[in-house]
Length: 119
Length: 119
Length: 119
Length: 119
Image (cartoon, rainbow over the protein chains, first blue to last red):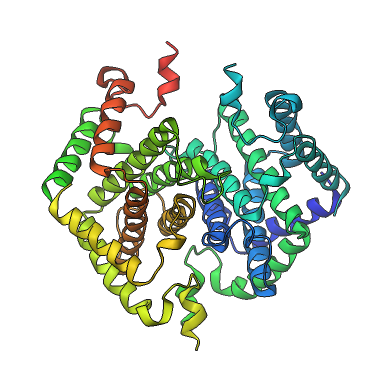
């Protein structure tokens, strides 16, 4: 794992240990905490048109940045307590997705895999 | 941003462009896609006790790893389309959290900020 | 609570007891199960434009109907195990919302309460 | 649909029309709003043990009741704009679930359908 990402993980771990919060950080609880933060991100965009969701005011951009950060922090904690390398996990999943969604079949389409896999 | 994380972002961007999927990747849509993946992670743990959520079978561990990866990929895409540096955003948010949750006040407690900030 | 709603609650309770599943139905677990179903509903609409999300094919309409039903069933179970009357709770919350969002201030606007409450 | 549920739906519709908010209530947006409320419910329980999630203080009980109500209101709006009868949809889904989870196979088990359906 890369330097700045490893530094961030170390910093989060230190933050948690200092506060004696590791006792609450079971995968079950962390998955709940992560989806709560993901929902706070969804809330930022819920009444926007898709186009409006791109043009953010500075205030909204900061709020979105904070919610992205909170979601990322819990994602890193989950990976930490489960001892999963996020970068490696992502690369493996993209390998699978590349097989599942071949370019020539899905190009420009938002149809789900199931829609065309039954051809 | 670090090398392996930058490589992963580049790989994801390439994956999306090849499939002409960027047209669907508004922040609104990506926030929805991310919470859907986060929920698939929650689903893995929904009937577990907190203790059970730590002891994963190899099959469940792989499933959890895939859901973590999917959530991470959409988080990276969101950061990409909004031009937000995730590492920097996380570090800034942790700075704020350190002020909001001072060690001496929250040590070992799962009480929310609001509970003690009204002291 | 009304007759058809009470009948549905009774039917769900019977379904759960027959399967000896009440042991898993803590509020924590049910809240997780409910958000998983809510996310399956979000998934149905994630790549749609808002306009497309109204015009459903018969297949998609059926899928949406199933996800709505699953979310509703877990909502009713949560209310059941917490002994909360959903109809009464909703009416009380709407009373509060009516004070929080006075017609003359919010008409036609999707701005959040916080935006105008600081006037 | 039953009287008190129909009354509640009428009240919610009136609330929305008075504020000219129907323009924002596409199924896509309502699904987002509903999952945001479902997450606020999850937040109430995220650091609790399953046992703690049952024993609520009066304050927490009221907060939980409000989040349940908010989720229910958006569920009813979604059913309204899609012209789906929630009671009927739930009954049809329970019919399907009864076939998918036969009592003799799943009694007392939290295993998923997929686990035993491959027998």
